Amino acid sequence: MRVRLRLTLLYGVLFLLSGAVLLAMTYLLVAHSGPNVAMSTTSTTPSGGRSVSIYLGDDLPADSKLTAAEQRVTEAVREQAVRQQTELMHQLLVQSGVALAVMSVLSAVLGWLVAGRVLRPLQTMTKSIQRISARNVHERLAVTGPRDELKSLADTVDGLLGRLEAALDSHKRFVANAAHELRTPLTLEHALLEETAIDPDATADSFRGQFEQLMAVSEQQARLLESLLVLATSERGLDRPESVELSGLTGDVLRAVGPEARRRDLAVAAEVRPARVTGDPALIERLVANLVDNAMSYNVPDGRVEVATGTEGERSFLSVTNTGPPVPPEMVDQLLSPFQRLGRAADDDGHHGLGLSIVQSIAAAHSADLTVRARPEGGLAIRVLFPAAETT
Image (cartoon, rainbow, N blue to C red; front, side, top):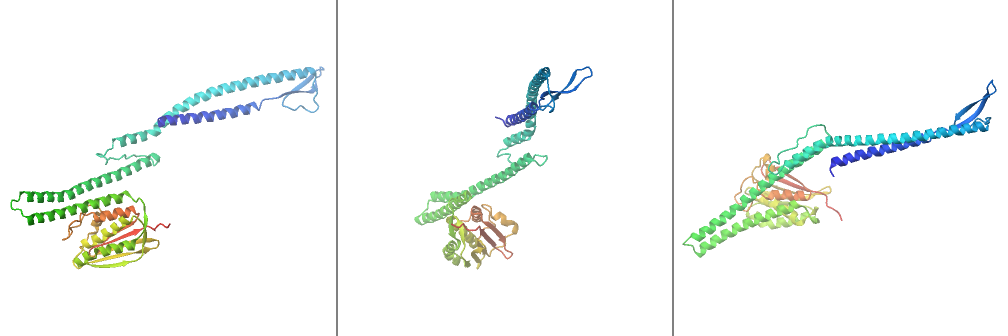
């Protein structure tokens, strides 16, 4: 049933019920106010007759005495009054019922017109929304008028369309960048295989060299696919959060990257204090690993990486700071987008610009606050502030 028809029926039923209640109350009040006839003797006329008074009430005067004839007159007058009252009540009921029926029909017609006028902006918005698709998601309802519920609804829909447009644009950029990143190693693989196939002087050593290059390209693809999978998993949210000791995960990551830090001549300073959080252990470990790996990969010779964990009140934090090339402050937000890199380091093979995007997604999945700040002397200062750990 259409909303307009439901509103019309609602208006009509409410008017009919209120009119019926008013009619019933009026009928009862009139019925209980009917006159009672009584006769009493008041005086004697000069001609010897008697004058009488007829009272419309229940009580006669205390000294009144009626003859038989006077009593018959009283009864006749009383019956006449009752008949008149009955006829009056019947006419009142019929006429009021007819008036109520006519007004109910008029109220239904007016309700139909009013409901149509009220719902007309909503119908306009519905048609506008139905016209909007992925190709013209930039269109807006742009409803003007007073700040009422319909205007608030239209503004809410416009806000939703804006967020949807931003999400679609981000998705398109992500797909295009992912296709580009995957196409590069695939093109390299194809070139290596083609070169090997058409080389008439190929030897076992040359085959081995080509095979090693193919293995390196394959590992690069595997890392990219793994990063994309982690990014998708973190954006899906948490299934079964657990209590995790952040300092323990951070210590494991630092021990694992120790040899690589020494190879790069990087000094790693750690101030790891107890910090308990609630979340997915694998995702949190990946967050720590990505931050440390990013700090090491985009650094300067003889650079430094500082890692700290601890608590602030009931909340736990992870802080990773590194030396490195200067980062323009206006570029910081772009670094959090997928496949965005400030520049390629000399040994950044296998990095696709997904590290900080994954960090941001994992932090959002854990309702953590991520702060990225460009240091004036170069490098980044990144801080993740987790919510208070849940107690069991």
